[in-house]
Amino acid sequence: MAKLTSAEAHQQELEQQQWLEEEHHTCSICQCDYTSDEGGIEGDIGILPASFCPTCLSGVIDMVEQLTAE
Image 1 (cartoon, rainbow, N blue to C red):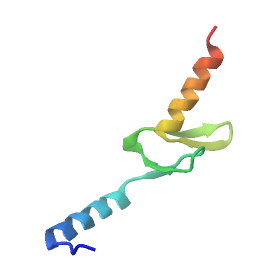
Image 2: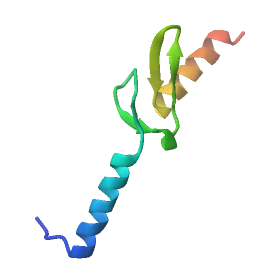
Image 3: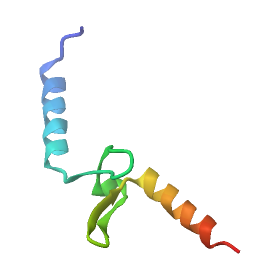
């Protein structure tokens, strides 16, 4: 394993800190973690909390469009 230079280690530490500070959500379908910056949506379906990552949200939207197409 290659040894990190001081600058590389510092950059890696900054990236980890930034990742920890972002608000993360877990997709209700695929269970992946995503941030609000990536897209997706969080809300409720009736009284059930729901979060959809960008990929699953796109799939749900596509499914609704297929169901409502004439």
